[in-house]
Length: 450
Image (cartoon, rainbow, N blue to C red; front, side, top):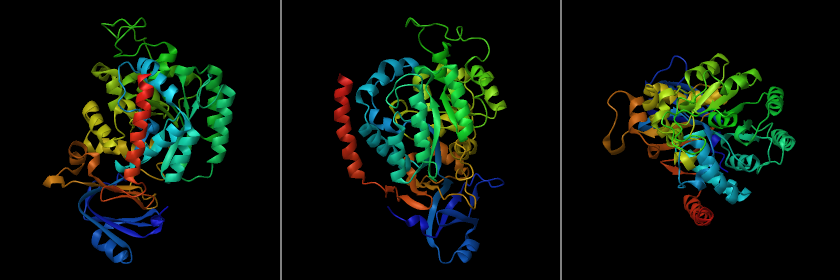
């Protein structure tokens, strides 16, 4: 593994978007990096004089941003792209994705799928992610080997799954993995309860006590929570018998039943995150905000699994993710940011903040990543804004959100170490990744046909 993160660098972009207090979009500024951390930010001339011994990296037509933070994803599902996607989400999970995953799931699938997912995320400028993996130990090992920053979800359920056979086993395995990565600076863990599989009040309370003890984050998908409580999903296409529902809103229970129960159990507080902005109505969003909890939006997957009608009750998220690429299609946070800007009417700078500092705050990592400030980890990306001569006239953030794609991410640094240079991956053999993906396509096609 390269040790280039120890090199002293001076990165000179055309535009700088630091997302730091008191700093807007800057021109003519540079960022110095030493020993994997941001050393200073300042005008180019002064920084050149101050950092005369640093390696200079000049990007005259690029914007430099903090690395993107995907607050929720399922990286191993890069291997499950292309399966049929049908709303509502709960039914799709039960009838399509779930059966295929159970037939195909193995440690090898999680390892290879996560490896492909990490490569795809880095290529798209995502330097930090929270992963909801069915086999967290395997996902953690892949992330640790790649030396990327990741939070790995620990499933919690009262029923048997691929991770553990019962409630006690889920907690025992979680605590063992927690001990294994306790001192790892890049790999963190959090709890990802599975209400749709069954989580009793006793298990929720036990989870709260353990999360308190470990100072651990807890995240839950609202759609799974609603399904478990028997609440009607706004925008869902069918009723319980599978018959089309002409008025999906009429069955929505009055008041906030979904999160209020977890609030009574003591789960809603800083460090708790609800996933699913399109399924989070104003009352739920207000409850989350009052308790200091976060709301993660994965707009592309949510739109595919809910439909346009669900946007009527949507709440603005505090962070962005991709959810499973089996639904979203790609691990692409720039595309998620564009969709979120259009859905929620967010300004370009605001939505880019959700994709960087917002994600870092939601994951409890704002002291390390999410903005370009002295002392933070040098997780940085450059976006080429002069592709085919289309250089932005004025508003750089708008050019990134509405004009750029992940293909324009030219450079990525993880803790000061170059992992993408001139749009090429440096940590992975791209031809090997392509061969790996092709082998799995053949294997999974047979599973899907079965």
